Length: 376
Ligand SMILES: C[S@@+](CC[C@H](N)C(=O)[O-])C[C@H]1O[C@@H](n2cnc3c(N)ncnc32)[C@H](O)[C@@H]1O
Ligand code: SF4
Image (cartoon, rainbow, N blue to C red; front, side, top):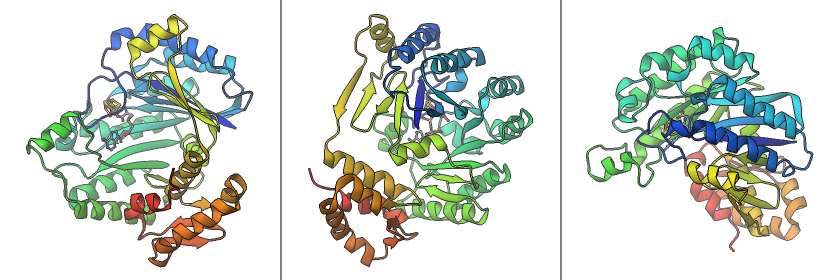
């Protein structure tokens, strides 16, 4: 099995915290789509003939494309790849794009999973983040999507926002739970260098919560979502039974995937490639049939560290049997030796041949992970 990620770089406006690759030059849309469809055709052998189980439109803002445009891209993928019946097809979307008519069309063209970037239900937060939507749109979009037939909806939230108290965050989580979606992704705000938000923090114009306050928000999130029956299956992801994101899970399981569109990454088991993060240059290079991506062959240590990093983020942890069969006995004994300290501190536990981060370890995940990394 394999997956395809399609990066749609367009955004209505720049959110103050965002460091993902996006452009607000929507005029170049048609040139971009032509190039994207050409890239899909030229990279048709990348995944050999593996069956494609998931398609994921991420961004940027894929809901800036019309359903006709999305459909043309899906068609190109289906022509050149072996897409299975009932493949999971996700579209990331922003609440302000989700009119009743658009949602109905999305559903009609076969999109069966909708991921909505709500981030917060509070207008002050949304303004500070320079989001294009308001709290009313945040609250209404899920009901509209349900009305159009969507049965698999995920929403994104961000905690650790400037000025947000624990009480504010609790209100956001409770509002999210009332929407009763199948899936919630909740991210700790990262102050990314070079963003307007980072600039405001450096200038002292806004203050962000202390590490202690962020830990309290993180713990509250886990507690409230667990009480509502959502499984915490990956560091930032929570799902109802059978509603895990198949596409994102494939990244954590080491499944092969092709990424198309500017800045998209691909992985085929032995190497990783990344497309140029510039839409204009991406279009030009594809038009001229010149290389538009760089490739790095992964060393054994790169692959081991990746396995550790992704494994520890998931509820299943690192499968020790798989680890040994992929990397050998010596690597396994090295891993077990390095994990002793976290095991003895109760930050990791060993269950059914798996190394899993404990509830206490979750807030210290980065440190636990780097302690287990193999040195190059
Ligand atoms: C790249 S965005 C794309 C989806 C869509 N454009 C949106 O804004 O909702 C995917 C998600 O990453 C999260 N995200 C982006 N920048 C972040 C940051 N600096 N810190 C934490 N989460 C962030 C947001 O929750 C966002 O929904
Ligand atoms: S957060 Fe989403 S909508 Fe905002 S700039 Fe980034 S990709 Fe675009």
